[in-house]
View 1 (cartoon, helix red, strand yellow):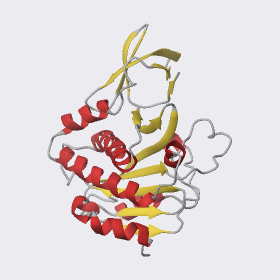
View 2: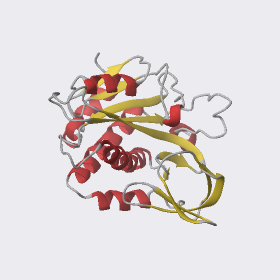
View 3: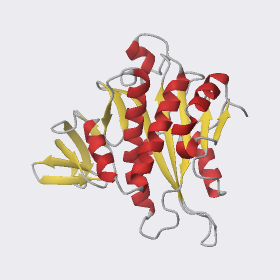
Length: 273
């Protein structure tokens, strides 16, 4: 189905900056989850750069099995299919997800800043926040070929959810979520945010594929000025551990210091205090 005119006009103007996404935008009035559908398409061999955009999701997915609130016409609910491995044995699925998640996080911050001017920050692992309130998030999932004989490489589906309009959030989200319009205090079109975010992702993805991950990591740290020294707690084998964030390592893990030393956190729930 053809996307609305507001997206088509800016998409055409930015085509030269959109890299693999330039000719593969698919718009849907409603989907259960853009990631769910993109995973099925990736399994079936959909081309790199295939981009799904929905006006609403009935079962939007966030990290750790959470639901992503997706009111009609109020946000950007996007999933893209990337195939960075090209069948290379030295790029396993965990490499793909960790480095691509950080790459997408940098692009998300770049794109929102470029299109709105908002002073957004990244919060590990890849939430976009203003102050302590969440504005956007990323969910990266690996799609492995159904059989060794498949002609396509493993894919990573990168889902991006951005709160654009000042929607009425459910009670459980009202204190922790925000939107671009809420922060700006004025209306803003969704199309510029989408185009600038995907243009930034195309650029950062090229850095990743060219072996310039050090530049991506440096940019990630630059977008996360509140990370070092932040008070956090996390679940460990001995129970809840409290400490302070130190840095992120080259694989995207969070380094945290507690009374027992420095821990490397790659999964699980980290709570920011």
